[in-house]
Amino acid sequence: MVNKSKILSDLSKIAVDAMSTFSSLRKEIETMVSLRVNKVINRMSLVKRDEFEALKRLVQKSIIDNEKIKKSRKKTLVKKKKTISRKKKAKN
Image 1 (tube, rainbow, N blue to C red):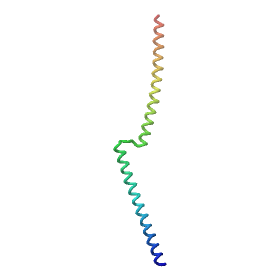
Image 2 (image 1 turned 180 degrees about the vertical axis):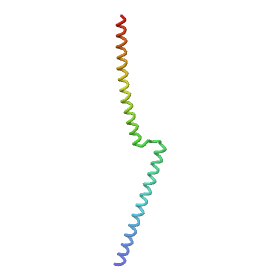
Image 3 (image 1 turned 90 degrees about the vertical axis):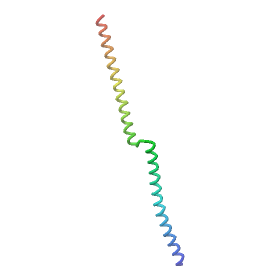
């Protein structure tokens, strides 16, 4: 009986040590994979998500501002055309 419990105790100790080793190995593999992924991303010159979102907001704001400017120019051109046509009528 003593032999069986000693064997079980030894197996238990081996299992605990193996779990600890596998846990450390898992962390090491995760670190290596993370470094490799970051290296590939840097090589590809990809941007981070927050940088992309900031640029996207700037572009959207620029598009809206551009549309406002176009509308304003149209109104100004219409006013100028009306003024020119009035002056021509006044001359005649």
